[in-house]
Image 1 (tube, rainbow, N blue to C red):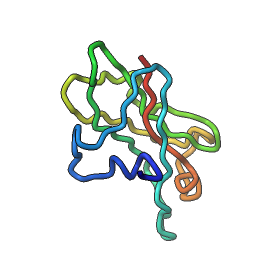
Image 2: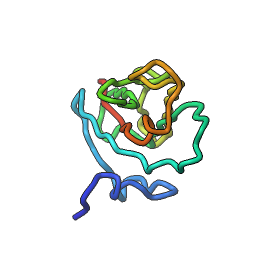
Image 3: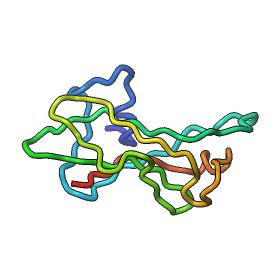
Amino acid sequence: MVSSNFAVINQNPPAGDINTLTGNISATTDTYGFPAMVSNSNMIYGMAMKTYSRVYNSGNRTANLQVISTGVTSIGNNNNAAILDAYSYVSSYFNTDPNTGSTFTQAAVNNATGGIRISS
């Protein structure tokens, strides 16, 4: 038994169906924290979220990758991304901190969470 979902899916390259998290209900969300950035990170250009996903049952699915900063959620630049029948990468990029609307600070990144939310 693992203590977090990340421990199940952190292989590089991805293990596919060997280790998976599953969900098929709209609004199901799985978020993670990030490792602390080093202290000399004085310029942060943005954040990126990626998922390696597939539809495991019949039907069409879409998902949003999200960053949550101080309780404010952003879905970045890829709203309702299609999840395909075969494994594929989906990305979303975040140029500004959703809480402030300004560039990310090191403290904001260190305290943010991010993950995937099934939208349909």
